[in-house]
Structures are given as C-alpha cells and as structure tokens.
Image (cartoon, rainbow, N blue to C red; front, side, top):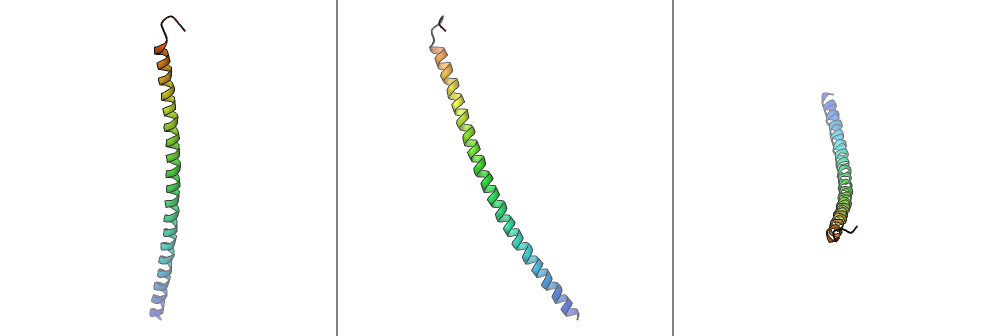
Length: 75
C-alpha cells in the first residue's frame, strides 16, 4: 500500500511539474511578445520626437539666418 501512495505522489508531482513548465513557457512567450511590441512603439515614439526636434532646430536656424541677413534699421 505504501508503494501505491508513493507512486501516486510521484505521479501527481510529475503532472504538476509539467503543467507549471508549460504555463511558464506560455508566459515567457507572452512576455517576450509584449516586450517586442513595447520596443517597437518606443522606437516609433523616439523617431517622431527626433523628427520634431530636428524640425524645431531647423526653424530656429532659419530664424537666426533671417535675422542676421536683415540690414540694420529695417524691420
């Protein structure tokens, strides 16, 4: 009888271990996908911010250039 109880315990432990491993693999894949998606979104946001910053810099440079080209005494 003790042998059957031990076998049952080992069997249940094996099933639990396999189930946990499968759940961990699924969670790992899900987390990996979420990280990749977040990285893509972050990259897009950074690209947009860099583009806007470059445009603002160009506008500032253009204004400075126009101000320097103006002759004294004219508006």
